[in-house]
Each structure stands twice: as structure tokens, then as C-alpha cells.
Image 1 (cartoon, helix red, strand yellow):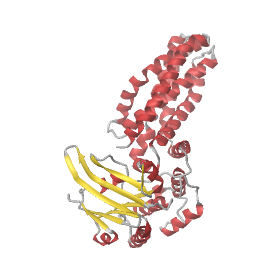
Image 2 (image 1 turned 180 degrees about the vertical axis):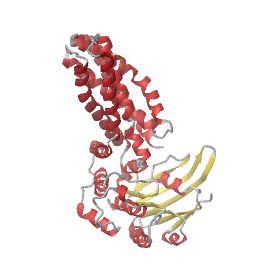
Image 3 (image 1 turned 45 degrees about the horizontal axis):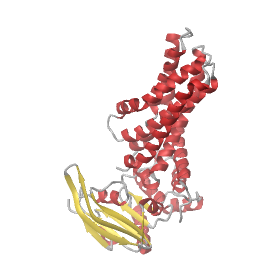
Image 4 (image 1 turned 90 degrees about the vertical axis):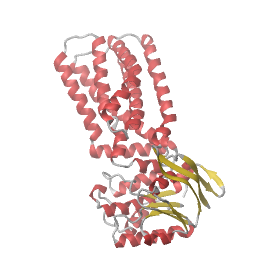
Length: 205
Length: 226
């Protein structure tokens, strides 16, 4: 059982306060949706949860089976898809997959790679450099790399950006599977995606 | 799924990934080798085999090495920022593994450059090194020091707007103790002085390498996580 607890998180850039005193708690089998207009700080909060940004005040605590763990211990169990997370465009899809598998301490499972590529509608493009991919294909490839390790915590920022209808449906199936027994955190502006959250945080601009 | 990779494994994977990318784009390799070869040719044409003393030839060699390093070693972190992959890397790998992988890449690149440039320099300058073992050890220790400084400074400047200028400006004062000892030691090795007389330079270079490497490993996480 995984738990992520945010306590009184405040973020300021220079003198501008982005948000103040946001608290939340989410555990395996739950989903949290961050809702707010552009510029309200959804991405900033996600970056704080993922240890990509230090908050001005407050803290995020990670727990596994009731025991507090460091971010480094959570890292192998975390998957993130967001517009600011780019893959290595001058490497092929398979080379990206190989790198992310190895760095996560996993064997390079070619069958799983093929399955993920097929599931995300990218079959046949395994050996192409990512710079030849369209923006929608790159978004799909981000899911391939985020799902390599079947993460216990999946965080999606603007999960369906750049995707066509087929891609959107693929992502919705991934979301439904993830929220069944794992942690899902979603930041979105799409009203149709609010339903995925058992809990919601409304962030005002 | 459990993690089976140690820190050193992860550092090795970061190194492999950077090497793979570099051989595909050749950005840093082109920059550093072209600068070194151009400078070497300019120096050799302007001076030639004029029989200059070791006290002059030694600084010239280190000028070529230092400025070649400055022309390409910052790329290791700048590339991650420019391609917006630094957040991806932050997410999947511990900071120390990233530093070690990137340091290894820069050290290999600089030593690879020297394997090409130093023999050419000796040939063009018609220079005979009378203490080759001491000479190689000084070049190796100095290069490891320069690549360590270059790696940590590259991490610091990678998000700045005027990266190129900042890299050289910040690196030079920190590299100065390395350059002073390396130039002195190289001159002594060319002149054929015994190892025991060069021990002071070795000690300074080794001590500086240990200090700057340890400080870099300890401080890197604070630089790397915004």
C-alpha cells in the first residue's frame, strides 16, 4: 500500500504566489484530479510531487506499507507523463526503451516493449528515431516509457494533449486500469476527465 | 518490480546513453576536436620546430587542452536542457548517478582528445619527452581535474542564458590550480627531471582532484534539483 501526503504546500516564484497551503492525501486504489485554469499551478504542484521542484513551504511525504520512504525509494515505482518531459529524440524508440529500462533496474524485455508499442498504436516504428515521430506519436511514446515498470504511482499532466480520438481512448483505458489498485494523479483542464478522480483539488489562478 | 541497479550501474547507463547520443550527433566531439586541431596547427605553424624551451612548450600544450575542453565539455548538461530531457533524467535516475555518468563521459572525451592531440603536438614541435611516464601521469591527472571542474560547472551554467561565456569564466579560476601544477609538471617531465622532483605537482593535482570530485558529488543534488 503506497501513500503520498502533501502538507501545506506553498509555491512562490520571486514575489508571486502561485498557490498557498495545498494539502492532500492519496493511497493505492485512489485517484486525484488537479483542476484549475491555465497558470493556476497544476504543473507546478505535479513537479513538486515528483521532486522536480522544491516547494517554497510545506512538504510531500511518501509512504509504503505505513513506513516513510525517501523519493529515491519511490523513484523506481513512479511514472510521469507531462508536456515538459521529453524523450531522447535522436535515439530510436527501442533505444529510449532500453535506456529507461536499464536505469530503472529492469531487464530489457523486448516482448513487453512490443506489447506496449502495439498497445499505444506505435507498432512498426520501433527502430525509428523519435525525431521522425509526430507530436501525437511522441505523446504515445511517453506512455510507453512511463509504463515500462508497471508503476505503482502514475502521474499524468495534460494526459491527452496532442492525441487523436483513438489515442485518447487508449489513455482512458490506461487511466481506468491504473486507478483500480494503484495511485493515479491527473492534472487536466478537460471537463470530461474530471470523472477519473475520486478526489479533486481545485487550484485557483 | 524491484530495482536491481546500483548507483554505479546507473552511472554507467547514463554514460552509455550520452556516448550513444554523441556518436549520433557528434556535437561535442566535433567542437572539441576541431578546436584542438585548429589551435594545434596555428601554434605549430607560428612556432614550428624552433627549439623553444620546455617552459614555453608546456603552457602552450595546456592552453590547447584547456580551451578545447571549454569548447565542448559543457555540452553534456546543456544538451539535456536544450532538448528538455533534464526533467526526464531527474525523474528516473538519482542525482549522483547522473553526475558520475556525465563526469565519466567528459573524462573519456578529454582523454580521447589528448590521445590524438598530444602525440601530434610532440611531432609538430619536434619535441622529445625525456620522462614519458611522468609526462603521461601529469597529463592524466590534470585532465581528470579539468573534466571534473568542467562537469560541475556545466551543470551550474546549463540553465543560464549566456552559457558559453559563463562556462569559461567560472571554470577558469577553479581550474587555475590544476593548470599551474600541470604546466609546471609537464615542463619538468619534458626536461627529463626525475619523478621525485615532480612529486609536489602530483600531490597538488591528486589532492585537488579528490577535493573537487568529492565536493561535486556532495553538492550536485542541490544544483540538479531546482
